Amino acid sequence: MEMEKGLFLRLQRYEELATSAERDFIKMLLSKPEIFVGKGLKEVSEIAYASQATVYRLCRKLEYDGYKEFQNALVYELALMKESRMVSMQDIDPTQSVEDIIKRVTLKNIESLEMSAKLVQKNDISRCVDLIGKARNIYLFGIGSSLLVARDLYLKLLRIDKLCNISDDLHSQILYSKNIHKDDLAIIISYSGLTQEMITCAQNAKNNGAFVIAITRSSGSKLGKYADVTLEVAATELIVRSGAMSSRISQLNMVDILYVSYVNRHYDELYSSFAKTQIKKG
Image (cartoon, rainbow, N blue to C red; front, side, top):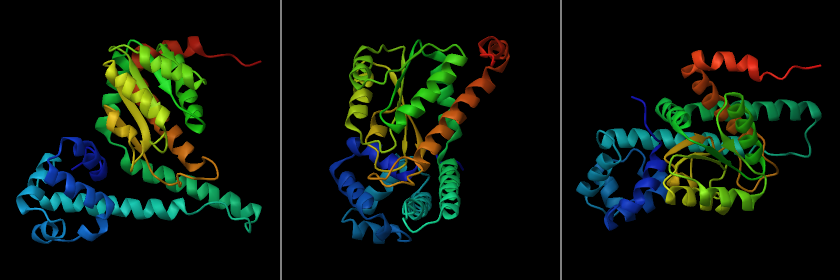
């Protein structure tokens, strides 16, 4: 059975709707998830100082069939976190030779792509394709390396004749988000999901009734709370980092998945436009 969303993201999204007892359990689970792994329902309720009924009802509210499926999701999420942590620690080493750097950087990018592929949900991609198709205008948001990814998507959308807007100026992006309409779509790219300006843009877009797609890392993302659809990329880089590398590759790969999925669905109507929009060389 394909999970609609990762456990931690489900918990973060549900937290605002949770009862006080559920909220206490969620906070403990997110802060110390490893202590709950492999524990029975009774043990978990004792550790979290919550009733068994509270824990079981929360599993159902998170759309798991029962406590066993909840535990399986927890084990899987922690395995991804461990794998992500191992990859994220592979940062710059001044003792490396050029040959070592070539191998290490390439390997890290491959690992990041493979981990991100595990997080991609086909239902999310399908819904994003729907939203792109229905949108009157598409607004793209990003800062730093995420802006480069947004620009790549901008060029792709222009190629298929979708009305879209992007600006390198942050103030202009904020103005876009304040003037966006309910028939528009905001695609907000932020690896950390913690960049306040991007969160503000997401809030503005939601307040105006627009749909929001977020491309962000799989855990600890505040941005995801304001998104109708979150396309998760693996958390394979530290938030404080030497420079965006594997994170940028994963985001670009997600953009490619989104673009190809849209083109495949609308292939017949888009085929002729590719020849028309091709810029001849020489």
